[in-house]
Image 1 (cartoon, helix red, strand yellow):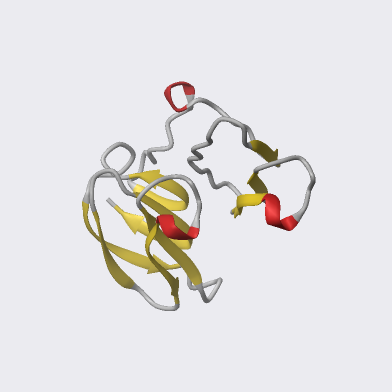
Image 2 (image 1 turned 45 degrees about the vertical axis):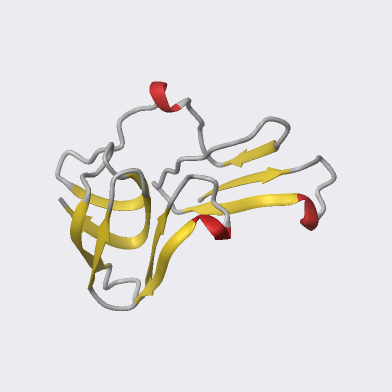
Amino acid sequence: MGYIESASDSTGQLDSIIFNDNLASGGHSYVTLNDGEYFKLQGGEMYPVDAAPSIIPDDGLYENGMFKVGEDIPAGEYKVILDSSIGMGYLEVSKDSRHQIDSIVTNENVQSDMYITITDGQYIKLQDVQIQK
């Protein structure tokens, strides 16, 4: 499990946190930071986008991570498949990679299979669910 956090200062106070997120085991994420922010990364590695290893799955099965629509996954309608061994998953579509509440376009605690439509430029976050290209 990984953890990311951006803060406005180094006090460690809750009100200085701009965003934070837990990353599922084996997952990955995009993060956009602004000048002057303090960034914390635990349990993971960080790369500039243009130097990061590919996250496009060879088998076309997307799971546990954040993907940029139009780059990592084509825009379109997808069936979201719940990992039945877990019982509940999470799906989030965001307009950017700032991990803030006002970035979220839609999100869902997935309790059964469903469908989602995503468009170029959005980001889709999957946790304990899968989508097949």
